[in-house]
Image (cartoon, rainbow, N blue to C red; front, side):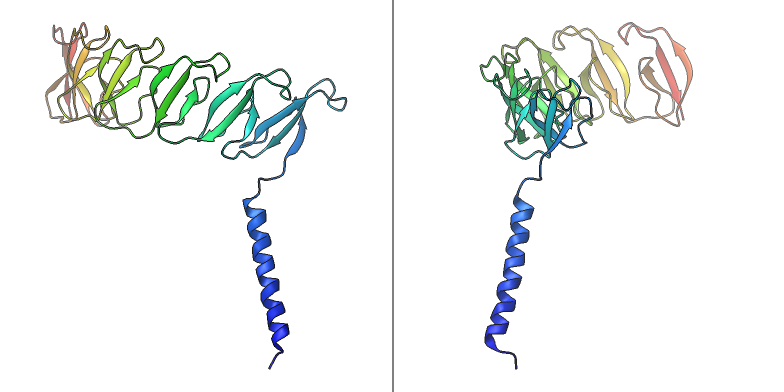
Length: 257
């Protein structure tokens, strides 16, 4: 039987290794120094820029992987999923603004020179003193039927624009309403049309910010009449065309399968 002291020593050693492992895992990765004419390693950010005699006239950059709340230089690449929440003048960035990065979350306030992650929308824009002269905005990825977003948002895949209006809450941009598509829904003509949908009618409207209103459907059948600005779905073909007043200036087409 092994002495108790020996066993306790083994336990302490194991706990020390585990604790050390946890500390290493939680700590930010080490920073590295590169010259300004070198590309920033993928997924990393610039945290400082300084003049250097060792970079042949280029600035010396300190780069590292990002973390929530990291301070970076505003000319840094922004990794996917991160947004700029503030910008200010200061030393240490070679004449560029200083910026703070956060991992995006619904309702986060951002500077509008920040990238907006794929699938996220801008719900408001406003003047702010915390973005180095840029507008501030609010973004979310919690998209729902009837959500109002600013028109400089990218419409997420699978959603359509059903209305557009003037607003004071989008920093000079218009306000648009998003909905999930269904057969027979009316959309604004600057809306993306989901794959498999066709346009069956178009007309002038006051509710689309000067754009036409279009009726779309994915209930296709042989002989369906669609507007010629529709994308013909795979496996379908145009059997004839004709002039119509119902497609907002476009000809109509007859599709067959």
